[in-house]
Amino acid sequence: MNNKFYVYALLDPRKPGTFRYEDLEFDYEPFYIGKGSGQRIQRHYSRCEVEGKTRKNNKIIKLKNQGLKYNYIILKEKISENKAFQLEIELIKSIGRLDLNTGPLTNADDGGIGTKGRVVSFELRDKISNKLKGKFKGRQLDLDWKKKISLNSASFWSGKHLPKDSVEKTASKNRNNKSNKTIHYILINPDGIAINIKDGLEKFCQENNLQRSHLISVAKGKRNHHKGWKCSYGKVEEKHPSNLCNLRYILTDSDGNTIYVKDIKSFAKNKNLRTKRLYECARGKRTFHKGWKCSFAD
Image (cartoon, rainbow, N blue to C red):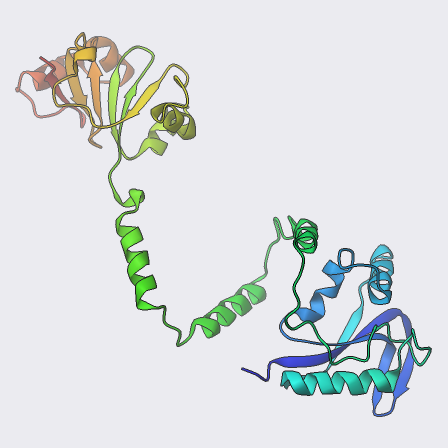
């Protein structure tokens, strides 16, 4: 795990040629030597405009304005941090720094310092966050990238175990999660017909051209109504409540949703049902009609 560092060189794609420095040879002019791990080598391009004006950042911005991106080469990988620092110092000395007129490198120091323990200001964090915000929105990953991410995630979590208290906390949260409980809604349409919904509010809204979020706002008291519909949490009583005493019939569909109806004929016509068959259900002569059950409210 400690041998995760590498040393790399950034190259200027505008300056091809043969550039030799002792045992090293580049096809493009090197302008920066660095040490890092993970995706460090890729981050110069995204952070150059917010990390301050330096020779390196100015060069990368000029490349960016010309529609170009720096080339890079990893010179040594899978080494410890100390070895990476040591190699960085040797390479900077060998190639030479631009500010000292000893070479083309834009490094501002002799290397071996790094950013370990560096404290980034909140201002700089906000600048970086705003710069990267929305950058990957709508990005489509190909199958190779998805496979790579999957393998890296599996490798990271392999052999790892969460603390017992974290496992118990997560399990307790899931048990108490509201989504694991059945939620009842009482809806009253503009005609005063009450409907009992057991979950499935999303489906009901789609069928009746309503917005689920607006009905939830009504139930929470944030709205008075939504398209004339009232909504509240709870379960409609088996017999109709006192504020719906003018409703005469209780109908229940195949999903268990309850509807209180005053005009059974109009209801049957709208639902493509036969009024006579619903009357028979209410009087106990039939069990149901096309999946609907019917009984008298009184």
